[in-house]
Length: 218
Image (cartoon, rainbow, N blue to C red):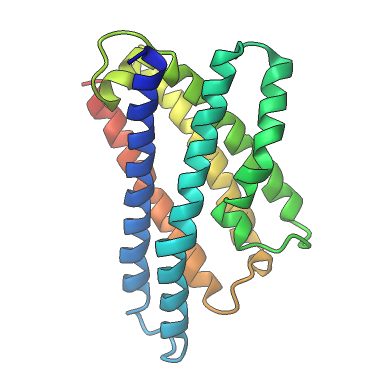
């Protein structure tokens, strides 16, 4: 197995694991929120929506985004990832499908005044994920797991942290756009609870990612 294929499998496994971890956080948080006195009639609607979303749309869409991201990075490496014109073409060719599978995008109104801001952030997320995936895929050395891959890719904890921070900042920016004006969401009821769960789930994921990075360099 060559370097790129080896790293692809390790990175893919890590991204799928993070997806499942985030969805589990959300399920636990939604149960907790719905036990805090929400109107009885709203509880089953919100819970049903979130369960369907996490078990179906979110999982399927995120798996597709993972595939699109890794395959775009792999294609760029095969064709010279440092050529800007080719990079832009690959991003523009793949972004519509990435956007189609983005969970925040799916739950928001395309006609809303803030939608273009959300669109811009989502593209930044995709670009940064592809750029980072290129670094991971071309890492060389005795690599057996994700911690090895992280060390081989970034060399230092500070560089790894800066890359992680970039990803987290873009994701947080997208959540804040929705939080500032909940009318952008399609969801008929429970908008405040759903965005609260998304924020708290993001914070838990963020803390775990930083902890994982610390462990990789200790």
